[in-house]
Image (cartoon, rainbow, N blue to C red; front, side, top):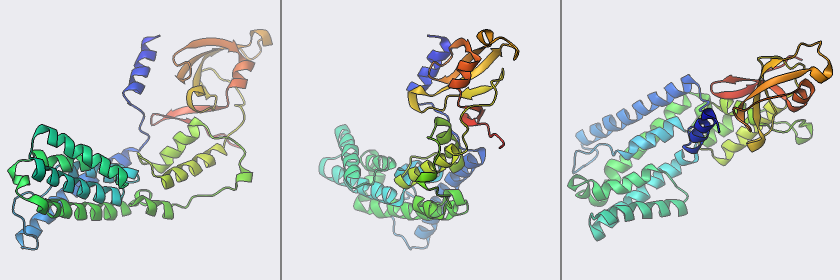
Length: 326
């Protein structure tokens, strides 16, 4: 095993994968997080000052809202980011946290119990939202500032935090057509071109999914509707496919167009002159990604041509097809 292959395996093991979202999308997400948390603190303080809300503490925002902001503004189409997940995840976990503290106190095992029960409840009530676990934990370990609130904690700060962050999530993401929130709105308004099954000519490839992910331009913990949209986009990219590249050229990069463990990307390092006899017309190639990564080998040009399905280039850490003019 080469050093590069070992590094590649380690990155896969720890889950360090390519992110195909654009720089614009990343900036939009970061700015959304800034607006959401600032908006929660500002509006809650105003409501308390004018007496609309009666709070027994100075707590304006709970820390778990920071995690919710990441989901709503960086992963707006994720299943864990949808309104019911956000509302149910926080409120149900909050109820469990307060109840556990009232019944058993704040022993370390009770902190674990509150989070464990919150996870189970979110599972069964179809509202898994990771920050909800932090909402439950905050009650048990947050000290008297939190515990003195009792169930009032569910109204202020949790309830008002939820209202503000959801309204901001809907309003802010509405400015960007591809990010509309909740995810169902994006599905409704996305003008996907539907192709009849009988018109499909090519199977999907790894590169088709990569291209579709770039077109969605969102790092998604995907919902069923989102997956359907992604699949449709991938099918459309598949229909732009050609059977084999016209030429095998030194320095160019090719894919075998397969999916999963059989997928492979090869770069032609060197090739025999075009006028070489067939038995000496060979190419030297290096595997850049996928099956056989970082291996170098040699084969006949005809064998490589049969293996290669299309030419690719690397764009934003993803391998995508090179468009061929008809």
